[in-house]
Length: 196
Picture (cartoon, rainbow, N blue to C red):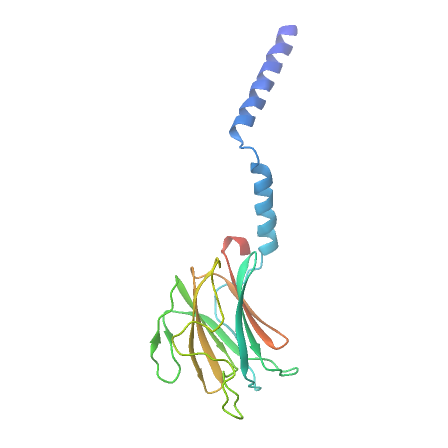
C-alpha cells in the first residue's frame, strides 16, 4: 500500500512539473486580459455601406481623429443644426474620385473608406470657407502618427452641399457611423476578431 501511495505521489508531482514547464509564466493573466479586451470591443459592425439622409445642410467646421483601444475614430464637426439629422454615406471603394471632375485621388492603405457628409466645407449663404480642405491633400490638422488602423486621409471635394474624404485603412475592417449632437463619428475597428 505504501508503494502505491509513493507511486501516485511521484506521478502527481511529475505531472505538476510537466504542466509548470509547458505553460509560460504570466500566460494566464495575459490571455485573461486579451479576453477582457475582446469582450469589451464586441460590436458586430460589419463593413457594408452605412447611410443617413438630411434636409439641413450646415457648414463643416472641422475634421479630427482619435485613437481608442478597439478602433480609430474620425469626427466631423458640423455647425449647430438643432435636432436635425446630418446626412452621410460611408462605404469602401476601389478608388476615390473627386466630385464634379471625377479625377481619381490616391489614398494609401490596404482599403479606402469613402466618407461623404452632408455638410459643405464652405458657408452656403456667403461662400466663405469654413474647413480648409484641398483636393488630393491630407486632411488639415489630422496627424495619424501611432494609429493602428488609419494610414492616410485625403480631402476629395466639397460639391453641391456635401464633403467627401477618403480614409486609407490597413484592411477592409468593420466600421460604424453615428451622429452625436453636431458631429458625425466614424469608428473603424482594429480587427474583425475583436468585434465578434
